Length: 264
Ligand code: CIR
Image (cartoon, rainbow, N blue to C red):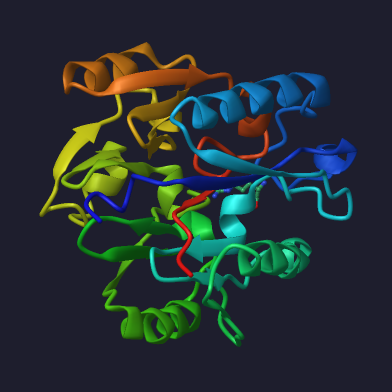
């Protein structure tokens, strides 16, 4: 199937619950407002569904404050899924909770067993390779284990680096199409996208980098007009979604879903 890095039939999301106020954050800018987050989350699901995709909407899991950020729990590829091993101790159990939902949809589900760590937010799948950024949550051993697991499916992993102080690799970049990456200047300066066409986030709009291409639309956080206009000018269709509450927990558009076409 062509364009399998951004054409998907399915997504999985999880509702935020009351415990969201205890979610991890690098800097405390105030408690997220659950009602507003639920509204943003509902709009995000509408956007995913507007492309014709089936969205599996999981109930809130208050045992895990960060569990709305389902992306970190798994890597979903066309051939199968890999359950991650999050580097944040409070998030380890989220991956185990996700596994049965993936097994219900996929024929092949494997898991990172450790001792290394790896989170989905550090993984960018393009049409030709899988880039994994080493970060405070993803280490060399986790990347090495992933590399071995996906090799039989024909995938090549390239280890890259997440900029210091940035939570995840994809906090600073997104795939827009098979050849095009949206990236902050600080990440692109590392040279990791030298073989791609790069659209930079506008000055002061680094938080717009965590967007997603999902079927025919680019879903991006609202409030970043310079970056939105650059994406529009490149010919993409944009849907903006409020992200003020997830942003308080360092989350964005990619974190809120697993996106895939299940294989049996
Ligand atoms: C965390 O620190 O793990 C959460 N508060 C945010 C996770 C964001 N996920 C992502 O970028 N893929």
